[in-house]
Image 1 (cartoon, helix red, strand yellow):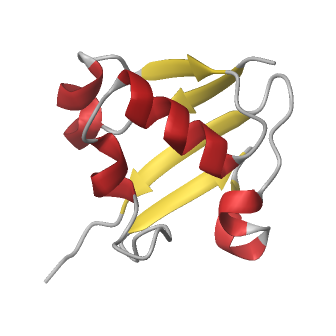
Image 2 (cartoon, rainbow, N blue to C red; image 1 turned 90 degrees about the vertical axis):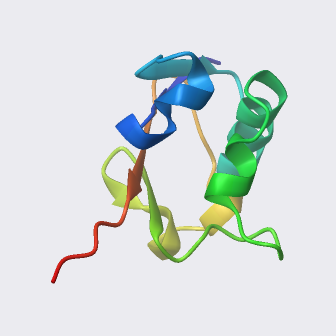
Length: 91
């Protein structure tokens, strides 16, 4: 069940500069675990100490924010596209 994850530029140094990573997970949480296994250190950039997605990190499945779905339990199916978007502060 391949799912593509779009990696933002600031995190690509952890993924050997890969822009898109294919995973076989069935949930967002599983996808993050698979990324951590393949690219140690990426999980701490995405999740806080309690294991929830950090406030300043937005994760979308097919352009839908997982915060309005089932967060880390959001199911993934074959062909889904996951986008990780770090929030950008302005001012």
